[in-house]
Length: 276
Image 1 (cartoon, rainbow, N blue to C red):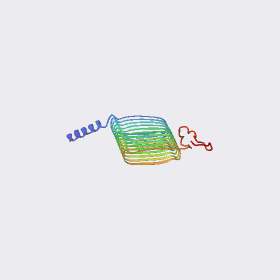
Image 2 (tube, one colour; image 1 turned 90 degrees about the vertical axis):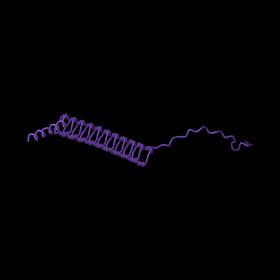
Image 3 (spheres, rainbow, N blue to C red; image 1 turned 90 degrees about the horizontal axis):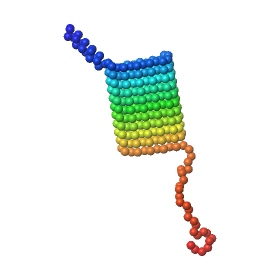
């Protein structure tokens, strides 16, 4: 019995040593704010600041040396962070009311940055792999940004200015890059990549524009630029080393002018008589 007791005590000591040095600092100013923090593992770090009323934050960390920072200024903002693995990083900030930010990380060295300024914006980032980076910036109201990354060393950057814009990014592979920039009202951009070293750039400036980009293969490039209203483009690449560039603009244009040399003088005018 004594040996069993000693053995059990030793196991408890090992478990304690393997699940310590987690850090949490949470500060709340206001009324009816809620923060739930759940840390399992070693050397995980969490910081939450809520300034306002009825804000809600939930952080779950499993693994080692994961980091999460949340700043919420306003009312009825919601943040959800789930980290499983090692040295994953999340940084979320909200300035406004009714915003939602969600981060889910599975793997190692993944990084998410979410910045929301306005009301009722939604940002979602999922990372499954290693060294993936997602940056989501929203300025305005009712914008929606969604990013899903599977694999390693992928990058997504989503920037939204205005109201009711929608951006979707999906990656599965290695070293793929997506950049989505929306400035206006009710624009929609969707980008999907499956493979290695693909690149998609989508820029929308105006209203009611729609852009779709789909890549399957390696080293493909798509560039889509929409200036104005109600443009539509859909581009698909299957294979390797393909390139597509699209520019769409509203407004009237004569297409430019031709810079021709001066017209020659007429040598034999009609009715001049004689020959030339």
